[in-house]
Image 1 (spheres, one colour):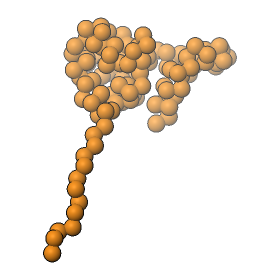
Image 2: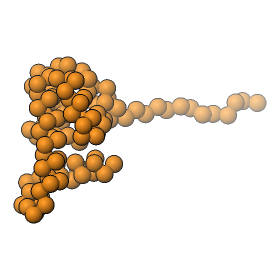
Image 3: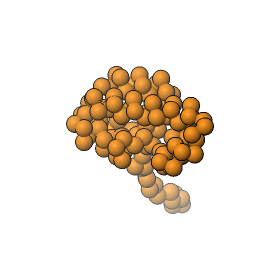
Image 4: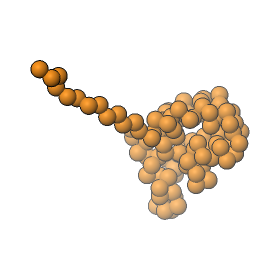
Length: 112
């Protein structure tokens, strides 16, 4: 959960955060390396490489789909635009989970 929050905050304020953390570059470098590797593996259409990178940085596929941004696009949109169809197909189930499902069930008492 901390990693997901850290990614969300750093991605939202990346341009402002870099000068603010000039003295403490280790967290920014780690996050930057993680994002660069994830985006590179996605663009290369390497499913196994992406899986290993996500595992190495302890990022779940669900969090990657929900929070990783490559070139200003969501990860699945980036994969589709880069024509990385294997990676896009691998990430589609996680994208579908984000859409949410609502079921309406009529619960009525049985007539006596």
